[in-house]
Image (cartoon, rainbow, N blue to C red):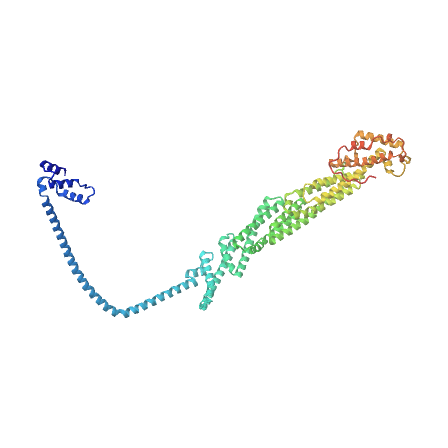
Amino acid sequence: MAEVQLNVNDEGVSQNNPLTRKLNKLLEVRLDNDRETLEALKSLSEFFTENNIRTRRNLRGDLEKRSLAINEQFLQSFGDVKASLDALCTDMSAMSTACQGMMARLQATRSQTDTLMSRSAALRAQAQRLDERQKLAGAFLHAFQLTPDELQALRTGSPGDDRFFDALSRAGRIHADCKLLLRTSQAAAGIQLMEAMAAHRETAYERLYRWLQAQWRASGADEAAPLARALTSLRERPVLWGYALDELANARRACVVRRFIDALGPMEARSRDPLRYVADMLTWVHECAVGERQLLGQLLGDAAGDADALLGRITQGLCGPLRLRVEQVAVGPAGPLMLHRLRELLRFYRDLSLGPLAACLADLATLADRMLANSLTCHCGQLLDKGELPPGDLGAPESLRRLLSLVREMLSCGDGRLAPLPQRQLDVPALLQQVLEPALEACQLSASRLSAADGATYLANCAQLAHSTLAPFECTEPWLERLEALAQHQLGLLSQEQQAALLSQLGLSTPVRLLGQGPLATLPGCDVLALRTAGSRLARLLEDGFPLPLGQLLASAGHRRILRATTLAALCDVYAQLHAAVHDPANGYPDPSLLLPVPPEEIRAKLLPVQPSETPIKAVESP
């Protein structure tokens, strides 16, 4: 467009020329938003390739020719379309004619086949009803009859197979479902089906029982898993269930007895200790009972009552051989300690057992208890019938020491602590009564042959030894109190003898005896010379520490301290009474401070400087 403007300017066209004004107006137009002008210019650029005077002069003619060519092409195209539409119209007319002919023929055919269609619809509805009835009949047969495979599994299959149990379970469900038919109009069919299922189940249960019987006789029911389901299924038939339990008990009893007999050989070979031998047998029997209980639990499930009864019947087979061997040990040359341990061992396993086995162990424990009593009686008789004399130091005799050693061993052995506390509260006093009662009687008999002081010392030493032996053990409190009372009594007698000996040694026996019987100065043995001599002797004894010779043979240092404290306290009391009587003018002593110069408070302070830590034994009243 710039070249056009230049050409116009070059030709010197005046600005007032109309063409010039149009061109200027055209050049001033903004073509950015004029899409039609842009499209026209773009189309023009496709065939207006050269810009010269000739092409510009022919531009209008070229445009008209081009427009004419386009219109001719458009006319030709519409002519082709018209020809196609004419052909299509002809075809549609032919098709309409054909359709009308077909409709006429279909109408004629429909009128001819109405009867056939009605009959076909009726037959189709009837076929649908028959199909539904067939499905119902098939579902009924499937629900209330066993399949051929299930019948074969019940009649000829292995009773331990899963197919057998599945078929048996389904037969049971069918039998239960048939009860519903009895409430409907199909009661007759329900009765027939119930009878058929009952026959199948009875045959299956009979085969199952025979199979279990054969399995238990062959293997002894060592493997519970494959047999538990079979045994559980038999619970539906109580009679067969009872027979099966009988067979199980017999098979297991034979099995455990055979295993027990086999185990006895190694036990007898490796154990030379009779108690160890019995302990091994009882341990084996207990472990066997535990294993059988677990096996029965796996076989019987939640039938705990039947399991306990069966366990008793199974372990009953062990009672015979066990009883025979334990009785041989119990009646053999066994000592009291071994019989005591045997009894406690039998009682322990008795409490862990049930049924006939527990009764057998209870009988054996009673036998061991009876043999223990006999053995203790014989043992005590052998030791005490010798009439053993007290030893020179007045200590406990050898027979008592041996019996107390036996009691200590019996009370301290581990087997004795197996018994519960109520049982020990019965056994321990009975044991002490059987052993210590004759032992103390023998000690008292021996003490009767001695002097009063020696006899008291001897019995106090015996009581002290027995007390120290029993003190660490439980259930001995009554005997500890009895022995304490015996020791107190004997120490009281010994204190009395020691007081009499001291008063005699001091020369105060007569004055003390005659206190309160009149003026002492006028009584024989209570003159001034006798009292002055007694005061001198008392001073010398105070200087020597006041020895007590009668207490030197007491085995217990505590007893010696208590005896000394009790004796000296009583002596101080007697001396205080005598000192008060001497200083009483009514007794007629001139210048009494020269007769008994030591005051009672000084004597008490020297003899009893500190109160004894032990509780003083109550002494027999001084004469």
